[in-house]
Image: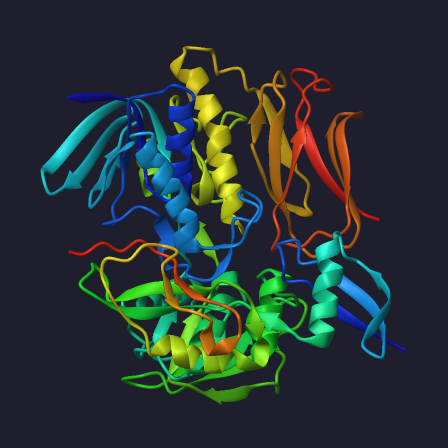
Length: 121
Length: 412
């Protein structure tokens, strides 16, 4: 059995969690203020995931870029593949926060959505 | 001269939240003056997520968080003028701003300062070396990349481990640049632990604690830096110099409240926060002038900026109703382990929210507000680090008049 330390990234509390792990299963856990910390540790051990944000080109608005983000976290190892897809997007104003620009990106079950209202100018 | 009940300087998260809350409390005659083309303040360029967990119970990107308040401001018919820069504020609350219509003056009954903060620059650090291009403040690089589609460089070094620098380390990496390291002069990071984890560790970006940049090389464009290890007194350790090549150096070395206008209005500033001295109503030393958000003290989370601005609205309403507010005579004074405390004066008649930051990382500690031998309130926190602001409610029932309140922290 080995003990591993984690910093939970779910909320700003940034709980420092210590978990004893055997065969990928948690035997003992301490330091987390809430249940989400435990879920985070399990996720980190089995399939670490992250949400990413970026920006895409937009035509016809007051700025050349529009901000976007994923609706759900994707496996960490897929982040750069997702970025490649995001970089292919070109939008035309107007767009609104929440507009889906890529559905089910790379088949990972997460959408890329606009996070900014950008009117046509 | 035009007259207004309330003029709010700055349409970022603090200004918007204050305006909406005042409307909810029945104050109708409000004007927000914003210097950018759109409201939202710095959140417009903070495209990463993690905002709103405290305020809305969900994780949003910066622009989405701002949009919630922009929508509410519109719903409550808050008047706002953008592309207008306030250039002067007098102690009797005459606001002078410059806009497309020319120079305008407004006499306000109350003025709310929500101008936010600025980044500390290379000039403030006195790093020796040449003055080539390719040296950016983290927030400036963020604006170039996230708003204007301009990549700042390919081989990047970051000086300082503030949150914006950490967020940008990840952003540079996602956009194909190589971040070779983050150098922090202190023996612990300045940013939040979750950002060390998800912005540096996730991308194998090394963090060099107790390291400082001592030389900058390059003529036209920066070509590299010399980095040295420092001892516990922050003095360079001879023989530890290392050379790093780069085409870009990003500085994330702290934020300073932007108080040019406050100074013009005679508002007294606290040397510890670099923001105004305020009472529990968030009123400054100048009557009728209030302050909240990063212009008052630098926050780590926008959620607390919104909550602070909403709390400020109560004080402004009382002031506009003519309730006496010159009764805050009890000083609140931090001990040497606490960097600063807000508010710095209270009446002792109303419960208030206290905010503070410790000076160095501490484990489990007890924070006590004490008046002489009398304990006003005492709390235990599991850990305290300078990167995280500590806030809690202080009940007024145990406060006596007169004597100062000391804020003490003891590691247990």
